[in-house]
Every structure is written in structure tokens, then in C-alpha cells.
Length: 247
Image (tube, rainbow, N blue to C red):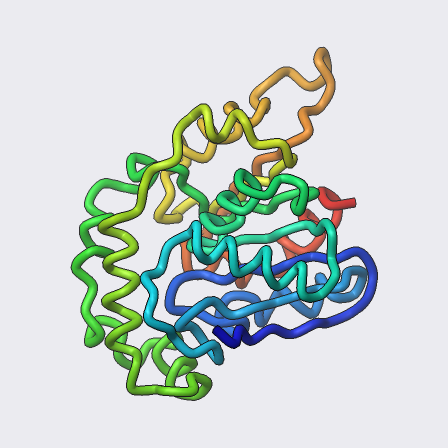
């Protein structure tokens, strides 16, 4: 597979992993310029997304995590911070579990470690998604503009649906075992339930009385008035939060 990636800015490396059906622009167009002011930002596009053509292989977070590890090795980066959004957060989490030596800190935006973390019925919506449901959306328009084979969009939708049907839940023990500190971020009207984000934060050592015990290594942010899609558009809030956490 020939995977598309871009490098912006200079400094310590930060890898950006986009969401389903998205590419660098629709996931990180607003945020990337802010992050690149102080970091060497590596933004990539997954198999079948954006400018990376599909190959005869299913979509899975394990395989996509292997691709990210391969890119880091190709670029000679022994360790990096990783910001994953939606599907990208699932891949970032998988990478941190499989290859902990590669990941310094994680930003997990709109992350659910198990299906029960989503609002009821949303998993069914992903599993039954059809190409016509996305026709005319910013994601579809971006795909038609960038993809090496624009006619493959229907196949991408089927692969993402299969990913949703076949995805294996992580466990609470998986979350507890994470070596890298994580910033867990959701919108207050996200597809991820706020209770699940708090549960994830607690599994990472959060939810303590910091004045007495000290601040935990991981953090939680709930952005007000924010949906799943608009989460990554909140650059004016996210950029300083991410910079402070990674710093």
C-alpha cells in the first residue's frame, strides 16, 4: 500500500489520525495549522481514505495501527505523540497497546473502548450505512476530489460498515494497562456518552481529588455545545489544551 502523508512544522513529532470517511482536511483542517506552530506534525490518510488508494484487505484498527507503526519506522521516528479522532482514536489506542515504545502521549478524541460507550442505536446506524446516506456530505465531496479511484466510495462505505459489525471491544483491563498518558476529549453532544468518557478517564487513573493526591497523568475534556462532527472544528479550544497536555 502506498500511504499518503504530509509533514508540517518542526519540533517534537505529533501524528494525526483522522476519522472514518474523512481525510486530513475534514478532520484536521482547522486544527493542524495551530499544532504545527510548535510541533512536527505528521498527518496521514488511512487505507481507502483520501489520497491513499484501497487495497484488498479489510479495515481493522489492528492493521491500520501496523500501518502507522510502519510509517514511523519509515520516517525514522522512534517515539511520537499521537492524536486520534473517532476511528483514528481507536487506531491510536490499538497502536499504544501493541507498540507502547512508539507512543509517548495520546489524545483520544471521541473515543469509545467498547460499543456500550456509544449512545444506544448508533452502532446499528454505522453497520447499516449506505453510500447514498453520505452523498453530498463534506466527506463524500472530499473523497471525490482526492481519491485516486473516486468510484471506490461504495466499497469504502461497505468496509467501514463491516468494521463496525466486526470490531472487537477493548476491555477495562486494556484501558488500565495503557502505558501512555492520555487526554480524553469528547463533545457534550458527541456520539460517545459522557458517562463513558468519565469511565475511561477513571480507568486511566483520573477522577481523583487532585488537591490532595496530585494531578493524574491523564486528563479529561468535555467541550460544550459540541457534536461528534464539530469536535475537531473547535481549534480555538483544542489547540491550547493539546499543547498544554503534550508539553
